[in-house]
Image 1 (spheres, helix red, strand yellow):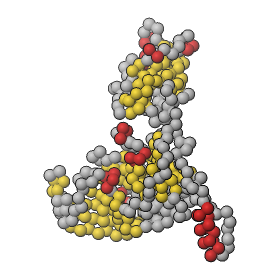
Image 2 (cartoon, rainbow, N blue to C red):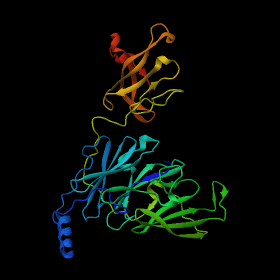
Image 3 (cartoon, one colour):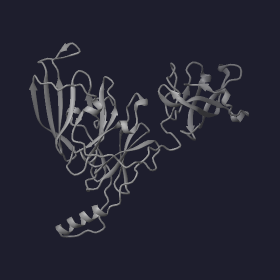
Image 4 (spheres, one colour):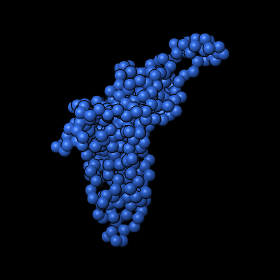
Amino acid sequence: MAASLLLMSAACGEDGGETTKGPDAVASSSAVDDDDTASAAQRAPAGNPCDGTRGLCEVVASVDVDGDGNSDNVAIELVDGLVNVHIDTGGTVSTASVEDKHILRSDITPSNVFVGAYHITREQGADIVVDGKFGLGGSELFGVIGWDDGPVVIPAPPVLASDFDDATAWTVPTEGLRVLVRCPQPGSVGVVTTEGDSSYGTPTPGGAYTETVTSDWANGEWAEKDTNRVSGEYTSSNRLAKTGTFECEPMHSAPPAFAPTVSDLDPNIVLGGRPPSYSDGYGETTPVKIYFGGSPSGLVSDIVWDSWGGERATGHGNAFYVVDSVADAEMMPAEVIAYDISTCNTRRAYSTVQWYFPSLGEDFDPALGNDVC
């Protein structure tokens, strides 16, 4: 997405985990209140929502997401091209995800993606906001995770929806004008667009202005309420979009001291670095085809990976076995090995790949690999 994805959990929208119900149901209203209070008090403490995850995962905040009065632990995991928001609500972990469209991967960590937890869509519980893509001169993409009997992705208000990205992405331009998101009260957002007298030497038609579009959240969608435009007023843009877009009161606190976790297998690792012309498979995870570009002898296709993310990735596919010339080469079953983990084009990658033909008596020889970094 060209803008950041906002994942807001209960404080700004809806909570993002499952609630633990009280053991007893009581008929009278006063008894129900007492039971709810007892249930909240007796609920198990929130644990580590990173337990059992596959990608790089970090607990980033503690906040009441589901609105039951207890603190929940919020973690962010980066895996499979997604920003996963895991919420532990006292022994129960639930998850909502937005697309991860960050480009400069070396800058991306779970704690760097987390923006905050705010009261956006409701008063009880917080919404979790995450960054799905840094602007880099384009639009910042945010994702917001709320709660409705479990975590849900909150769509963008109409004024922030994009025709080019997922409707759930809160798309915030970062060039020429400044866009802010304010939370005047739970269930309402004010999207502020402000522009100076000129931008990059080009005069702004009508001069500087600040325009606020207020939208209310009801029945799972945003409805625009009113628009207020003030001429001659400009709010300074001297702030980063990631940290300065949401002007809402933070509801979260520092989480317990859980160490960042990653499994022994790294599912985010890719093959090689910057792709040569007419090549395939470079910069991808578990590519189904690898092609160096040029001669068909540098092609292996129909790859099925038996493992990926460890010290070596192993798979099998079909490749040309060349004896005298490529013109006479025959396509045969081949074993594929990717190895030598390094940093290629700013990303953690297998820097070397080799395929060979066991049916012809060939074995893996790491000295004969092809450098793809």
